[in-house]
Length: 83
View 1: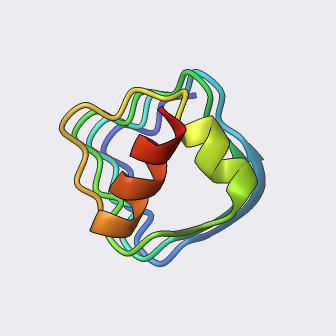
View 2: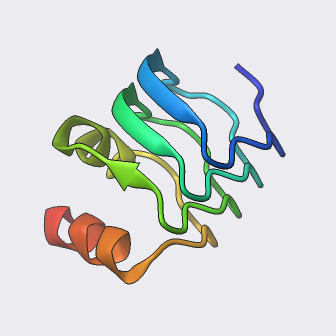
């Protein structure tokens, strides 16, 4: 799935399968991510500031590429705690 540069601000993503998806530069600010599988997804340069997420999504995000992604301190610390 190629969602590079996608504008998903305030989107409500629920039970979505985005394994290995290209989300480079995607705008996910303030998005609600519930049961979103992102293992292997490329979120390089994506904006995840103020995104809301559940434990399932957090675990899959920890297995995604997030180099240069913008994210709040809460998400960053949650991901670091899983590393």
